[in-house]
Image (tube, rainbow, N blue to C red; front, side, top):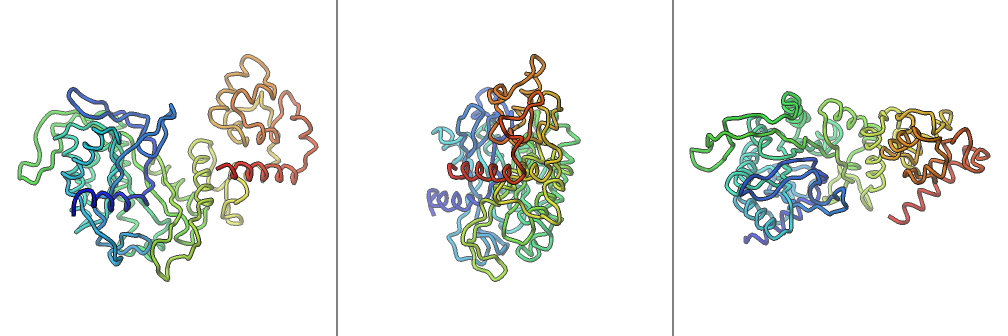
Length: 424
C-alpha cells in the first residue's frame, strides 16, 4: 500500500478524535531548526488574530486489538486497515510543513500488539521529528491507556500536549461497550502526568539525556539538553450520547477531572452511529445540541465560577434544550437579580447572562472613572439583549423591563436563542 493510500485511510480514521484546540505551547525554535510551537494554537482552531491554524491529524494505525462497540476501528469491523511506519509519519509531517500545509502534528493510534508496543512506535516517530529533523513545531500525542510510566515519561518529554481519552463517563459503560479497557488504566496515566506537571511546576527541567529512539541497541544519545514535560498540559475526551449517563453525571465528572488532574480541556464528542450493535443506541443524527450545551456548561465551570451542582441537580439532570445553561440558571434564580452594575463584584458580574469574562473586566475598569449607563455597556461588549433583564444602572431598569414578569423574560430569551441558532 502506498503512502497516499495510507494517509487517506488514517486521516479519515482520526476524524473522530476531538482532542485538538489552541495549544498554549511556547516551544521555541533553535538555530537551524524547523518549525515553531506558538501560543496561537494547532489545527482546526483560530488564533487570537483570527488566523486559522492547521495541523496534520492522523492515526499511526487503525489496526486495533480491541473490540470497542462504538468505534469504527474495532477489530471485528471489516474495514481497510493501514499502519504508518515511524519514519513515514516523520516524513509526512516534514513534507507537509515545508509545503506550508500545516504547523504541527496531532498523532493518535489504535492499539496494535500491545499498549507499550504502540507507544514505542509513536515515540520513535516523534523522536525522528525532534532529533533527526530538528522539528520544534507543536506536537500533540494521545497516550495509550495501559502503557508503562516509563514510556509516558519519554513521550511527555518530546511533545507539547498529551491526551488520555476517557471516552465513556462511567465504569459500567466501559464494561458494557469497551470491556478490554478499564477505568484504572485510564486514570493512572492521567494521574501520573498531573503529578509530573505539578512536581516540575511547569519549569524547564535539566536532563542529561535526550530521548532518541532508534531500532538499534544505542537508542539513547547522552547529550545535554533542556527539556520540559508536556508544556501545554493534558486533555481528555468524552463521548456524549452513546450511554445513558445524564448531563449532570458528565459535567460532575469533568469538574472532578479539572480539580484532581488540572486538565487544560475536556472535549466532548456527540456520538456518531458507525456500527450496528444491540448495546448501542439508535440515533437518527448525532446529539449536537446536547454536545453544545455541555460545552457551554464546561466553560461556566472553568471561567465563570459555577459548580456542577448549581447548573443541574437530580430533579433536573439534563440541560434545557431551549436555553443556554447560564440563561437557564439565571431564570431559576431570579431572586438574585437584578444586580446593580456599578456596585457588584467580579464574580457576581460573571453570573449575568450577556456579560462575559472580558466585558466584566472592562466594567470593573470603566466604573473607576464614571457611573456606567446602559449606553456604555454596549460599547464595553455586554450583550444587552440578554443582560438587560438582570441588571440596573444607577438603580434604573432598561426601558420598561421592570414591567416584565418571569414568563415574559423566559419567552424573550428563548426567542433570542432561536434567532441566534438560526444563523449558526
